[in-house]
Image 1: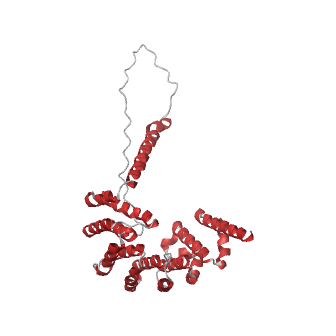
Image 2: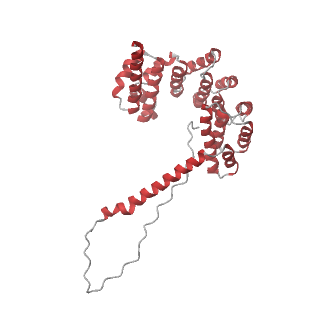
Image 3: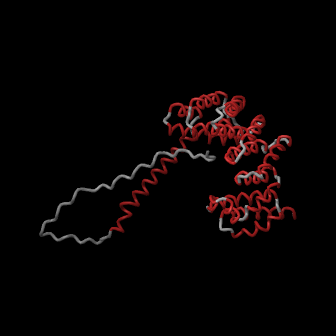
Length: 341
């Protein structure tokens, strides 16, 4: 299961046309002197004419195509996107489903929802389409922007009444319920969490915890709603899978300002510690991501014990890490300056 699906890319750019050659010039008479060539150039000097210049031209054409294509997609109505989901080729359907899911990000920021008619249409497409990638996008669209009266019962039904052996679909329904931010989704999510025990179920367990956190850390969530979620995340700190425990520590710090996982976050400032946990973490990119997560979480906690270590990382090899520390120190200076005024 992939947490970050990417859209299908447009078809490959058109090939550059072959360089045309003119007719062979006629041979000069034997008595005529051969012309003197003042611009004699070798093959290396001619390469830009025959390869680089055409390549640049093709690149510009492709960029124009992508720019205008993206602009046209942004101007499409929801009904046009749904039409592609109904009748397009598989690649077209994939792109349309992705476009629908991405469109809901803006809608969520504006607290907008699909109309009941659009929500019903998405549900109809979901019930008739078997492609897992398309279904994944549709679940997320329903969760983020579906009409709550229709989308929430449907997502709960997929979770509780779907095929017991279809774990992937249950996980997608859980993601959708998390995106809905509806407290009504919490009881079945807590129940499902208890079923995802064991080392092999670490990923659905993590996704369920993330969905619970997304709902309970929303603005305006009451303490009564937040408290059970915090307790489940605290349990996750001792999860045998490092991915679960590390994420629980970061979520507790970032969203609830709870320091229960601070010992984990302090360890994550050390790349050597990260590398020893899992061989997959030997890649520099993964180490960098976890260091950044730890820095942000410890700053959110205002963990002064970690400040010295963070300040020592000003010369960190990662520009992203250095930038976060620079912004944090700049914000501290501004806050201190405002206090003295």
